[in-house]
Image (cartoon, rainbow, N blue to C red; front, side, top):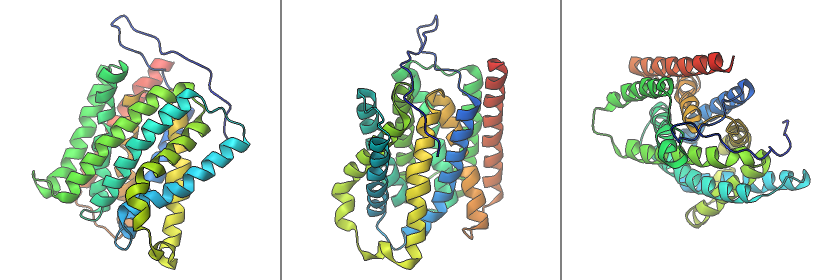
Length: 308
């Protein structure tokens, strides 16, 4: 995987309204985030098939307990700078990520992979809302319309179970809010931090936060032949490659655009769930996926026009 040197120190410009204006974003960073979203989309089926025999919090701790030291070793060998932005951003985003992953894994014990993916994506849209008061990144009209369209997509799935969410849906939604805060934290610190070092500290902090509850619940079931391949995917794709791609992308992408692009997770997850996971999504899932795709295409088309 190609890794870049330390990003130059940058300060977000301020608009006349006083709101912080994030960088315009680069096509390469959008593609990196799309790849990360694809990799995470597959994890919904993998986690669903794993938590039936492994404690969900133990699974979260184990995957990042392996990923964190590996990333730290690579960052140290590459002599990446561990600045204040790396330690602070990585620690805060790791804590938020630990909460999000644990709640998501617990929710997958009581709901389907597709439902979990859609609700997680709906929560990611909170990033655009949180970024306004926390970072001064006021969403544009186009981004607001995109968030609204993607929210309709999430609402279509929520309607499958009626207005009253069950335990799995409530746990997943709470985890999604934590993921939204994680996106905002990375939007704050990623532009001035080395991506590899930040991803390493984030994964390590996530493992440390999950350790008190996850470590005592580890048992030998995690190393059985039926789980070892799934665990390897969760570590390599879901805990090392995808988080690093997200950190790299958020050097130029605003929290709102990042949250909206992460909304494509359920589109990929529904495809994996129906082809590899043996699920049969109802028509409303595909309508929801269509709304999310329209939202992402609208926002990115306008962003491409503005950059030209």
